[in-house]
Image 1: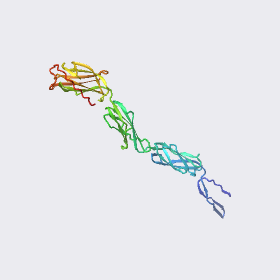
Image 2: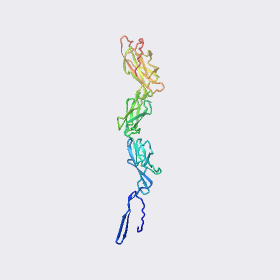
Image 3: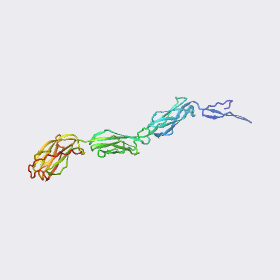
Image 4: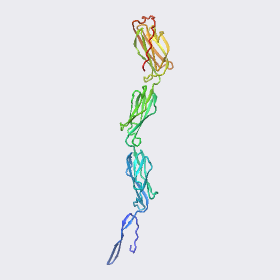
Length: 364
């Protein structure tokens, strides 16, 4: 100013003109120079902004980049290249060499995007983190920690559900149902991804797990086989039945575990037979004394024998005891009634023992 030349710094991006005026007494002179355009200088930094920091898998997020020169002027020359630091979480779609990059959210997780200048790759910046959540549940898997257990043991069930992109989505958990509620009994786990079932009855069962959030999404586990546990007692049938004098009566002992399952192992057991009176009676064709005792064999968990009584109003109690564990016992009674036609002698006599009829093999 007050000279013949003026100097200006170009700073802001845009267009401007300079007015030159001369003021003397009685003489005013004004001139405006032609417009001067100022362009942004070289890029020195950038910003990267996502239009959302939280999306669901299958949705897109847009990253807008702005470059600046040293004076804060925006500079988009050449555009930018975009790279995700989690290429499964955020998958590139489009935008390289422009100022907007588009990415698809796919895998559940967190990622950010790096945007670098095409003309000056040393000029770059990262976006804020974007979190991608799993989408709605579409399918599931169900697994077991064991496929074979013994009655009284537990089996755990693990359920997982997935969206269309393979992301696990367990929101709300699962409900669990056994297809054989005596074989596998529900204990706990509804509303979570883990469930526990008790094995009780001998047999095979599986478990259905259905998503709480979407009941149409369900799956079935593999089969679980439940085997009988150790023998704890012996059942007797038909206990208390009336036996016609001179008639063979079949009776059966079964080896039972604590849950009432027949333990199908073969074993040898001590048997004792007692009667109110020392009448003659036979088991499996062998005459018994007042307190007969012998060892008997179980096949597939059962022992079936024949009893023959030759005296009316006599009650026979048959007791079993496990030779390896005396606490494991079982007993039953059979009582004689009126003599059958053509039957054996009464009154405690020693009528001849007819040939016993073989007992039928019981159905477990």
